[in-house]
Length: 396
Image 1: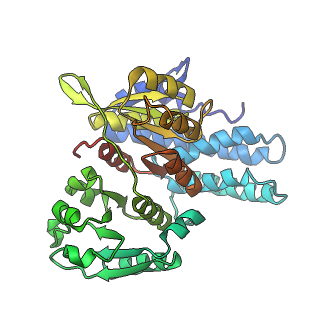
Image 2 (image 1 turned 90 degrees about the vertical axis):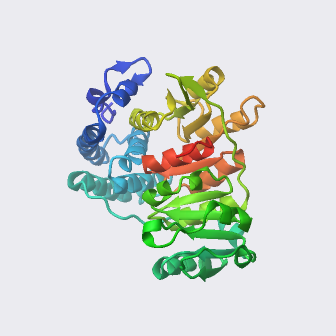
Image 3 (image 1 turned 135 degrees about the vertical axis):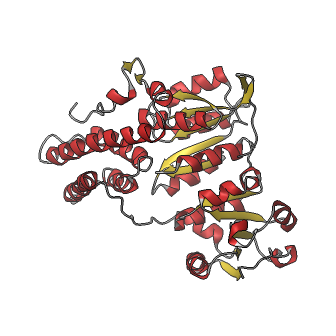
């Protein structure tokens, strides 16, 4: 197995019957050393793997082994500070599905670019993909109120909405929020979050409820954390800056189609009530990172390495929420989601899908099967925590 992902074993612990011991990784070490060691190992391993992949294109190239490495890069690159590697790996995944005579040269170019990024360790900005036609047609003719944005960002949003034949109006950035009657003609309010230190409190929870409108809140992680009611409020969704065009359109489409989000139960541990979250992902590094992040934010995290194991653990543990990757052996994320939402005993279990970047069709399919939310790789661990706590109705 020339491309096996084994380099992380020294930091993840000894091999076990179900793979690497990522639970030991989640409980050992601290802060910067934990992620720094993972990143260094990821880069060292990636440099060697990318060179091997390039060499194999001359003879002995194994698409299945390459897909396993690409899946690992897509999931881990963004977590570890190398999002451009995730972007390139996702593009190569798409190439491997195309029976094109020119794919060989394009694969080589892609692998060479990834090898260069591993060597330079410098993230770059990738191209933005288009959203599915279903999203575009669903937003056409909708009316958007853009509240609180500076001129440059409002202009960017306006250009995006114009491309989907939607209507919008920019409401001036003022010291007081707009009155409910001002928002009445609009289908959706897109709100920029300000802090008190910026000179404007933005819209309060009461103002949003009075408007009786779907609201998409846009802000940095810091600003969102300053307004915890934004995460708890079920009548809205949020978008973390810096935002991308497809993310804006997907979340707007989901809000306008009325996502049904439900709360969940809890568990008592060490005298405190803690929510139980099951993470299903076949990548041990992703499992280890998510376990550490969720445990550090007051949750009990259980781990499954594939869809089949997740199915059994859901029956046994009755978790409060499931975070599942889409690409997994045995049962993939879609099959697992479909099974859960069609079973009366598990139908109410909230599900967050993990999906690779540039897979907007997967997001639409996931919502159609009943997923409550999604997050794209690479993503910020803090954004995941906010989305998990939002579904659990737990204050941030």
